[in-house]
Length: 112
Image 1 (cartoon, rainbow, N blue to C red):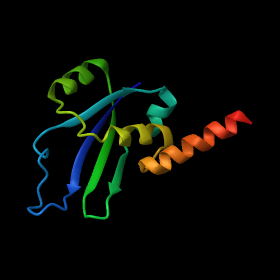
Image 2: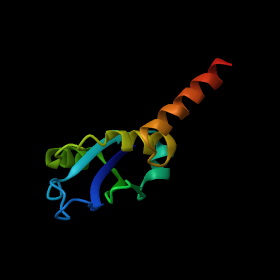
Image 3: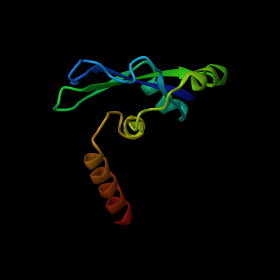
């Protein structure tokens, strides 16, 4: 199943209350298994930083034709790809530190 992850910044802690990328579409298309896709489709995930900024990632299922159209309008994900990785892997947006800790724990559990 193909999922479209779209990034917005509804909370902006900048001096002028603006985000330089607010006029663009920030999209990542990922292919996931159907079970994972169904659990994420239609959901939104938010992440708040202490400085007042808030990111929101909205997830929607798309077909191959729609994915191709969206990719043409895409302006990149602004370095926030880790949020999508976190959503797919953990079902929430976690910080990189927490993510690395969980990955290390999983490796230790697999090792015995």
